[in-house]
Length: 387
Ligand SMILES: Cc1cc2nc3c(=O)[nH]c(=O)nc-3n(C[C@H](O)[C@H](O)[C@H](O)COP(=O)(O)OP(=O)(O)OC[C@H]3O[C@@H](n4cnc5c(N)ncnc54)[C@H](O)[C@@H]3O)c2cc1C
Image 1 (spheres, rainbow, N blue to C red):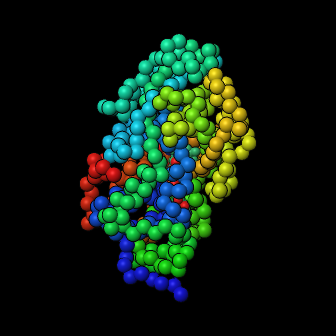
Image 2: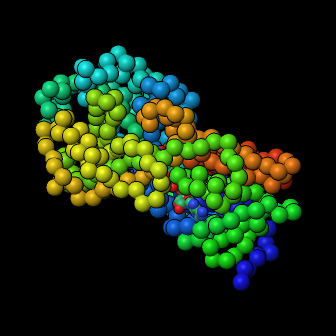
Image 3: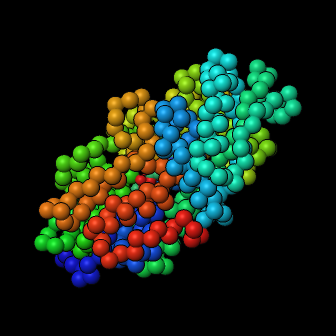
């Protein structure tokens, strides 16, 4: 038998990834009644399959994404401040390769990277000579390069901390709970869950990440204006390839970059790849992706690795906005699609985004929805309150 709850929530969120979690925290802190349903465990999908970086995205400068990089750099500062226990600034070294990006281009990129985000506590970039440093790691064909800083993060924990705060402020968080249907009825949304409960809400937010197309088509049954492109990114984990607390940004001949990041004291995290896929479910690395990542290491490091060195792999699906470009050139920015009926009962579909920008995205969601929440606190608060 269906069980209809009498409470009418202000906001119902589909999806407990970083975006859903960030919105739940922000909205609860403004005194709103929030219900979030997550079909698995919070933070157990894309948001824990990332490269675990809070970063400006140096590479996006090549695609002229100055606004996204500036916002991400500002957020890097904010997230480091509000979540010090799970973030750590880390130097990233780019070995220079004559055939690829020129030194002038990299220096220009790093100048922008150092300055686009405004004042920062994170150290600025510099040139680096491999006669003095890292000659034990890099092959002798690399004589010099550059060093810049980004921040590593425990991505899953970041989701959980947002969820914990939201709960403390009264949000109802339901794990292992799939949204299977949602309809506008009179003056509320009626959302049906797979445990037979029906929840009423004034506003519905679709933060289903790479499942957004599936949710729009099968749960909401609406015609959405945007579409998402599913691009798998895979990582391999090896026993640590070197002892230094430094990451490498390795350039490949296909113009893509691969990060090598110190991981959990004993390991190196190496990724990522970009492969178009049809389904967001059960992503896993292919042999080609493993070889691509192994070859990248073997083309740069003295230490050579093979498949036997891989201790673990994981893959995630990037929910990128479809704009029919090469995967590496598709924007990592987010887009909102607000769908209303007679200027009432809003549905907000969230497309794209990055871990790094989740907090700003959440703030922007509240601003977008403010006309429908007239009595709600408008003052932003999540940039200063520690998680
Ligand atoms: C390989 C890779 C590396 C990345 N590296 C970085 C990085 O280093 N830094 C960075 O800033 N960004 C990075 N990103 C991007 C970042 O990880 C994602 O943008 C972000 O995690 C997406 O969060 P989300 O909340 O939209 O999606 P998700 O984390 O996938 O959350 C969506 C949730 O919705 C749930 N859901 C779906 N349908 C339903 C339903 N019907 N009912 C209930 N729940 C449902 C899912 O179970 C899922 O948990 C990376 C992405 C990938 C794939």
